[in-house]
Image (cartoon, rainbow, N blue to C red; front, side, top):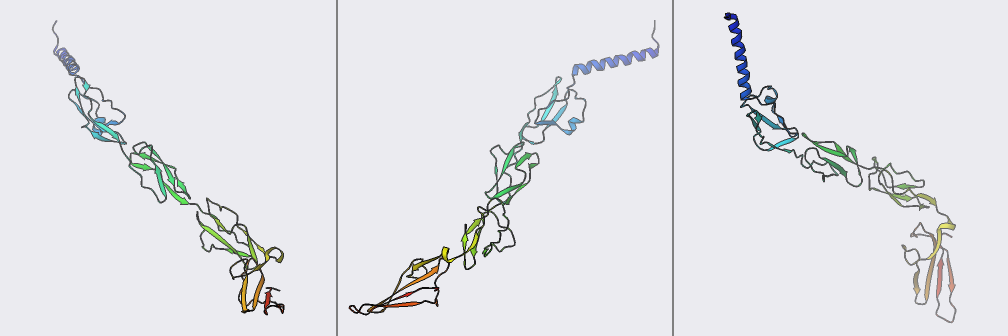
Amino acid sequence: MELLPEDNLKSNLLLLLLLHLFVGSFAGDCPKPEVGENMVLSEAALLKNDFPEGSKVLLECARGYEKASGSGTIDCVDNKWTEPDLNCKKLDCGQPKPEPHMSFNTSGGTVFGSRIKVICEEGYWILGTSFKHCYATGWFGKATCKIFTCPKPAEVKNGKNSWIADTVPEYGQVINFTCNEGYVLSGSKNITCGKTKYDSPPPQCIGATTEDNIKTSIITSATATTQQERTTASPSATTVIARIFTSISTPQQGDKFITFEKKAPRTSEPSSTTTSLKGI
């Protein structure tokens, strides 16, 4: 039985198709390359679906990694890919640039994926994130160190403090207190600003009284608490001055005194003793 021309054409086409499939199978196609976690296919390789014998594919380092060595090219040989020679290493973000009064704990490293702790100097607090992360684009996480402050010191009745600025006191600054004349401090004469509060409450100014605050002293100089003054009026006379004054004042020039004179016995050289009482 003879085949018609139309049947011959169909037979030839089927034969060519089988031959193509046989030759293609013999030559071999490579599958789509599989890469590790630190490598990716190039954009051109991602757009391909077929990888016939002899194909070349370029590998690149993944995001967060950089090429240390190698070309990155693999070849399709005998139905499989050659081993890649590309060596990728993690990006190093390096030491971050610190803000004023700031440092970092980088014991965990500075390469891609690392996390470091932000540290502020004593007296400062962190505004922002307490950690920075190393990403492919560099360090991520913004922070600044702010100094601790305290409220303005309270006004003290019958006294004053040394703070005259419009701003609030900052960490470590000292406020001094003084009382008006006739009053004495009860408490610490200065307070120090710490972390949001002072190290002690402000003092009070208490009025001085004769019973509680006046004492009798023999004075030898204007600045001592207990003193004795002796003046020689003549070779045969000695004057002793006793003054009564408060512990919050210093004897001044022009103070008024009441003088008592006592004559010495006739048997000895003439002498006199003068006693002055301040404030009487």
